[in-house]
Image (cartoon, rainbow, N blue to C red):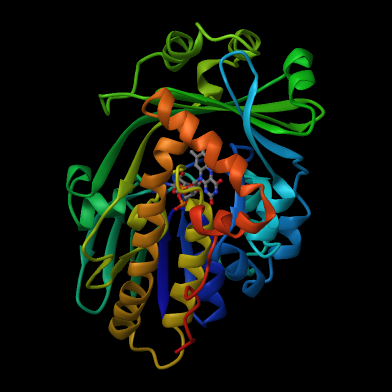
Length: 390
Ligand SMILES: Cc1cc2nc3c(=O)[nH]c(=O)nc-3n(C[C@H](O)[C@H](O)[C@H](O)COP(=O)(O)OP(=O)(O)OC[C@H]3O[C@@H](n4cnc5c(N)ncnc54)[C@H](O)[C@@H]3O)c2cc1C
């Protein structure tokens, strides 16, 4: 059996490892010219953790884990309103939680690819003939390819989804926020952070800061926006949105890199009634983006790839495997999406009262008898994600 995977992000690479392990011949097509290193910092926990254990990459991923002391919510002057200990969060996730850069996950999955997986950079699908027993593809450079299965792992703006299932407007649910992230160097900002992850989260906007290593601080931003349209000048938008704030915001904005080194996107979730059609299946953000508010997109991308390997091995009944993938993962993913929408008011309060409620609730969760609530609130659970291999 042959699979072609569109996209060599976390979902695509995890799927390549898992399908290859299940006996498939795998070709991966990636639009970018090479491995996309760096990216933003994320917390890795939830169902992807167990999937990474199963795929044999957890030790490599953990070798990149950073240390975090406290997670603090601060006000516009940098005064701490509430805080959580990262160790306590890790306990709430049964010890399975660590911060890592997105690009480091991608690199380790890339390094774990079996030799016989073909990976073509600067390659993109232009047309798909999605038949009942196989797919015929035309690539942007005119080449054609055939396979038993096409896996669309090409992210929230998935081209595979557009070609096979329909336009973005049918599936992408805009959550009403834009997000941005970049790395900066600034001794003043580093001093204000120490080992902590600090979030300035006030009405309609949030800025998070963390010192990744001696030379780099990661800044990420979320701001409420009516329009789904991305601004022509992201830095100008950030300066307009955060330039009036105190604390270390002036230094953070002044040290921003050039526009091409700023990640900027809208916050959205992907909602589809079905993730497969004939011999095309979607996985990761392409199928079920949960958004950074849910904090588990990378984890679900990895878990989804592993799940495809579990359901598409064995008896070779691809249709039954895809149906099992969809019906099993769907309720679990919907739950994570719901948690993400719930978290919006936490990270980007709609009013000062929402911010005060958050601070009260967080400070209460630090009280040992209530600390169990933390795992529930952040939806740390990965229960039920693993499928029995077919
Ligand atoms: C600021 C921020 C913070 C986040 N924090 C967390 C967190 O704490 N925890 C967590 O688990 N997740 C977090 N996430 C979410 C997580 O990063 C994503 O959900 C995850 O990376 C999705 O992986 P993916 O492989 O499905 O998609 P992507 O990472 O988007 O990868 C898609 C790949 O497909 C390629 N591609 C695109 N179009 C084509 C095409 N036409 N042909 C071929 N290739 C194509 C792209 O170049 C890319 O390599 C965060 C996201 C952001 C933005």
